[in-house]
Length: 233
Image (cartoon, rainbow, N blue to C red):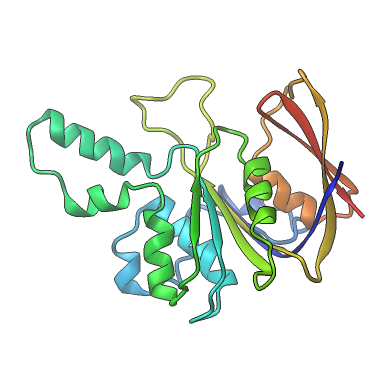
């Protein structure tokens, strides 16, 4: 059985050299650091790479004082701040209040929502390396009478060296955002195909932005032992 919905807006950023950018990747920006021009300085000073990437994406799709629910997903959240808190505790040093407060999984979207005047809910997920399906299902489930738009944001940075191994993802920082809606947009069906299969290649959420900006009809993804497919109607 297919679940139907639309995507009306999308954008994404990943770290990389500008010359690696392909002009046909509609909605995707490739640069060494995210564009922070839209982030107010008072907020920018509190945010690190993950926070700035997330804020840059969220603020593209939330007009000032507009209420829109947010689904936020990150595999490890602000892991750099979490590690800093743990190292401070081990060293019996005072924990930075900024690091402690922003290490909370939904904190980044919380401070962004306060800055933007967005009073709608924020759902914070952690779904391993394959967060797209949980994010889509969460957002679709929030489309009820009176709520016809949900902003989704997925972002991550590479793990600190102490945690990293050859299988760690992502390899570079990224952030993507898209608006799931019951209204106009690219009409899509989400289908579960089969169980017990696995994908040989890691599918980054950045790949979804490439799909939305292309003329491809299908996008396969994997989550929790199941194959899923996004298909254009």
